[in-house]
Image (cartoon, rainbow, N blue to C red; front, top):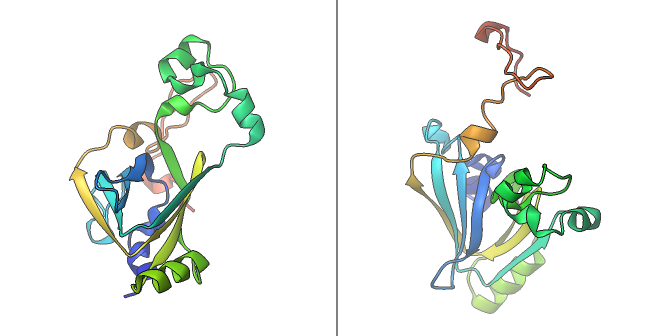
Length: 187
């Protein structure tokens, strides 16, 4: 099975909540701590908190996905602490202080990656490159292999903010959902 096929088994990591990312303490591997409500395809009810570990990672880069205008609007320290942002009257701007990011459009394998090819030649081992995109940042990671490990079978963010989202009226009150048989299919 190819690396792309193996990664695709996890739904391309779409709509997972990324809580933290960076090099592991030993500095060889790159880790992404995330919450998911889907689990692995063979365990679809396996919602939980996971570590996606990219092994043998000689190169990892991160770049902002927030626009220049977004950075300027959210420059104040108020935006790095959610409670301070709320206390300030929820001013418009990117709220860094949510302390997590939604992986969308998620993870993409970079076919024909020049970076992976260069590292494969240098290290004499097969290397791959992925891109993980969120609303806040984009990661580019060159690696040899990966593992996904559940560290706890609970989530603390996603089940409160992403699913299920209940429709609300103008006053913010939750509206009753139609019976299951009448719900439109999700696209």
